[in-house]
Image (tube, rainbow, N blue to C red; front, side, top):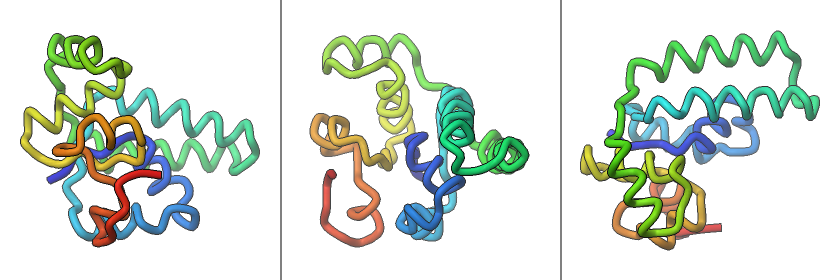
Length: 139
């Protein structure tokens, strides 16, 4: 089980050719857990990809349905008061803090490519490359 940042999920679901490591990470650990916030971030990313003509609205709808079916069952709500505290103490967004807090609550890694999270939470956050067997810790 791992907590997965929404950006990793977007790469996995929407741009597998650009992020083959996300597919390898899914193969390595298929139990991807996310805070409910993931749906909002994922939906916004899909809309932006349509606006930038990476795929059609029909493709986006299909990706949304597939993503919802695959990942809604693995939603876990983080402690939002803890997320607020973490955000204030570490100077990160409350969005990012929800992923960190959820990983802390479940005592599992947070899979992310967010350089700030990798730097500020080295015991919890792990990059795709590191998780998949490489050594890189950030971009």
